[in-house]
Length: 373
Image (cartoon, rainbow, N blue to C red; front, side):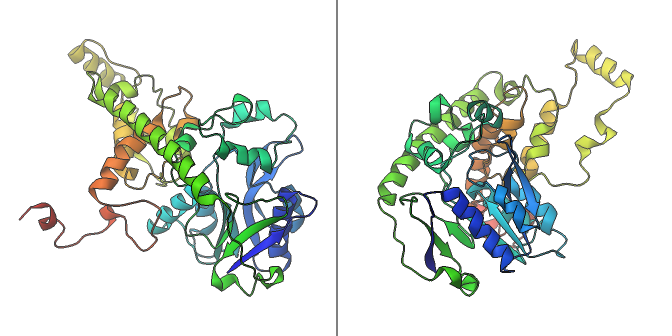
C-alpha cells in the first residue's frame, strides 16, 4: 500500500516519532528498536517498550555506532519474542537477512521499518560538528546531494557510505521515502499489504516521487565510481610485493573489527580462547627459525579466518573500518575480496531471503557446473 504521514509544522523528525508511538500505542507492535537521542545530542541504539521514550527517537541522525542487525539478532534469535518494529538502514537490513539465513535471527513477529539512507558519518567527527544536536532532515538529505562524498561543513561520509550503491531499502515492511520527495509537508510511505489494516489510520494515497530517478542515478554513478576506484587501489596493494600481509601491517590484533561485524556471530570463537596464547618457548623457537618474530603474531591468520567465515555474507557496512584504531581500511579490503567470492558463486548477500548462502548448502551437481567430473 502507498500512503503518507502528514508533517506538522515542518518537523519531519517529530512526525517519525509520532508514527512510531502510534504503532506502539495502537498495539501494532510491543517494542521498537531504534536510535534514541540523549539530552547532549548523542544517539544510541535502544529497544523501547514504553512509547513515551519514543519522544527521544532519532533514526535520522546520520551516525551508526553499531550495525543494528547485531542488536535485532539478540532480540529475535530465540524465536520467543515480543512483536518488534526494527528501524534499520539498508545495510543493516541486508546484514539481518544474512543472519536469518544463518539461523541467528528471526523475522517472525518482526516488522522492519527503513528509510532511504544518504549515508552516515564517523560518530566522533559528527558529534564535534553537531555539538548541540541540531542536525535536521534537510541537512541529512544534503549528504545525498553532495555527490563528491563530502558532507556538511566539510565532513566526509564514512568510506563505506561513499562506496554504497544500495542506499534504498529492499525487503522492508514499512519504507519511509526521502529521496525525490518534498518532506516538508508529507513523508511518503510504502507498506506491505499485511500491514494495511494496522496502518488504516493513515488512509491510502498514491505518493509518487519527483525526480528520484535522475538524482538517485547520479548519486549511484558517483558511488559506483568511488567503489571501483577504492577496490582497484586495494587490489593493487594485494598484487604488490608485500601483498595481502602489508594491508594489515599495523594491525594490533584488538579484534574490534570482529566485535562490530554483524556477520561474526560465533558464540565460541577460536580467537577469543587461549589457543593463540602460546608458551614462551613457542615464540623463541619461531624467532630462532626466522631470525625475528612479530609480536603479537597470528594477525594475518585472524583476518584470513574472518574472510573465510563471512566473506560471502559481507554487506559492506564498513563498521569494521570505523572500529579500527589503526585506520586500516578493513571494510574496503573485505569488500574487495568478498565481492570476488560473491561473484564466483553468483550471490548477492542480503538481497533475497529465499536464496541460501552457497557454502551452507550442497547440491549434487555443483562441481559438474564448473567442469569437475
